[in-house]
Image 1 (tube, rainbow, N blue to C red):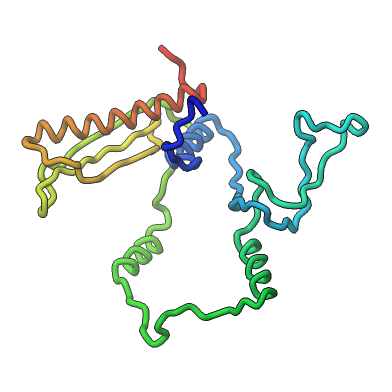
Image 2: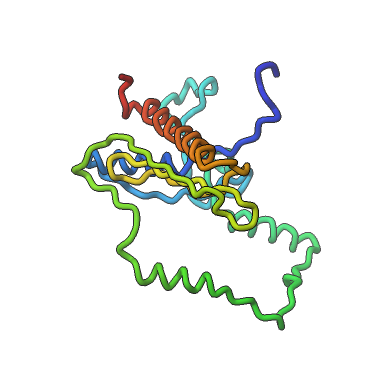
Amino acid sequence: EEGIDYEEVFAPVARIEAIRLFLAYASFMGFMVYQIDVKSAFLYGTIKQEVYVCQPLGFEDPDYPDKVYKVVKTLYGLHQAPRAWYKTLANYLLENDGKSASTPIDTEKPLLKDPDVKRIFRYLKGKPHLGLWYPKDLHFNLVSYSDSDYAGASLNRKSTTGGCQFLGCRLISWQSKNQTVVATSSTEAEYVVATSCYAQVLWIQNQLLDYRLLKVV
């Protein structure tokens, strides 16, 4: 079909910065925020819960315009637990002469221990008060900081890009990664950092404009 790019592939998942942006604005306005877990969607899975939908446009029943439909099987957009669909498929295979088998893994070989993970858990357990705090009684101005570590990588001598963006004092996003090219000077490394940070600022600004949380001046 004309106008459709079939080579463009993307996942319809919200960026974590967009979620933090909403939380920052909710704290600024004093809104009440509720957290809800949504399970993944599976096609043609059996639904255990009762789900009702409105009559789709063009398929209304003229005799019962106020009635709703009861969904029997899941379609795209409805959500069901992955384990339920796995159980349905496993039962079908067992009923049709399928046989279950254990996972082919050496049971005698113990799992390797990672001391770094143990240190991370010790740090998290000892610092429960640290985290992202979004206070209410502060301004909502977009502020950004950037810095670079020139030729800081010991293996390839690449510089490190670092930056963070705030709405007031509410941390929205941060970056720290090696640059893709080797900078020939500290000034070049700073320009690369500024470009990366500016791109993130533009994205946040466009999000604020799209959500009508920021007025064009």
